[in-house]
Image (cartoon, rainbow, N blue to C red; front, side, top):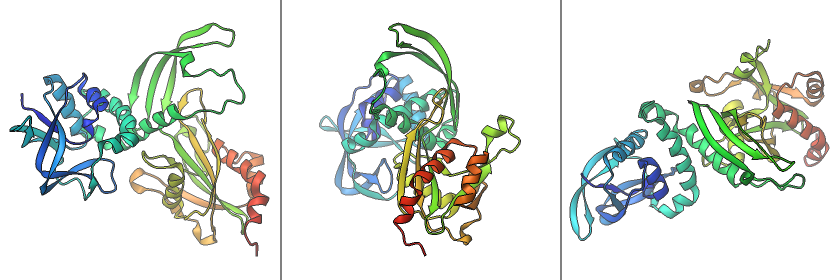
Length: 375
């Protein structure tokens, strides 16, 4: 079998073994006339033709079934195998490597696998586990089209595994006090549905379960409520929502704070500012953190990060926004503070992040207004 030359992310042993479906031995190899470089603005490498350079990498000889899995994984990103010659064990030999159909982008600094692994290693392994579940069920093109949300979901999982609750109140149970008996992946798409089977320690000293529960897996999201302390008003957006629609709500158009899913590699603050631009053509000033929380932990695997964002909100800011390619149809509204209080009291604010954000504003309004000159 023809050896395969690896120069990028698959040189990360945990990722290679997961994708291949079994441990794979790597041996050092080099590709003359090329440099392995970061793609500028991206999280992966490319090969740049450079006569004065050699690209370090690894040579593998995978089993036939592993090669099929590796081909599927690379095809999700549009990569296919091409022949090349590499230096291995003191000789130049024929090999193959995966390449995109055209140059991946603009070459940046020298590629560093350790630097990539520190930020992306755990996330990439988690994402690859979802990608490889689709082999034989979906085409590489279908998987590749939604890889962004797959990786966002993977990063949300890794982020949650690293977060530690202060624990001022509670028995102190951790994940070690629960046993995961398995997960059935009922549906993998833009959102995932899982049947999770687990048992856990009880407060009386016993064990509950095993029990099976349905879990809706999304990705983490950010909400931001824009507030103009000079004009003393907020900006709300209105859009159609499938949750209330499926629930039979007579008015499935919700008024909400600005919100959006957190992209992999993006901070919550960056997401808040990006979504404000996309949904309301709005540039935010200072962001005030409200909280990190599960909106409904009984069955939804998602964390929300909520902010209040100071902003200039003139009358001209209202209008229709959103990404047309994502079928977003978003109308913005300017709401005076007194009317916002009335909406909150009478139930017009019918979603958790908006209620929470309004309560934060009520507690902090005087302080926020004292920091600006009121005309």
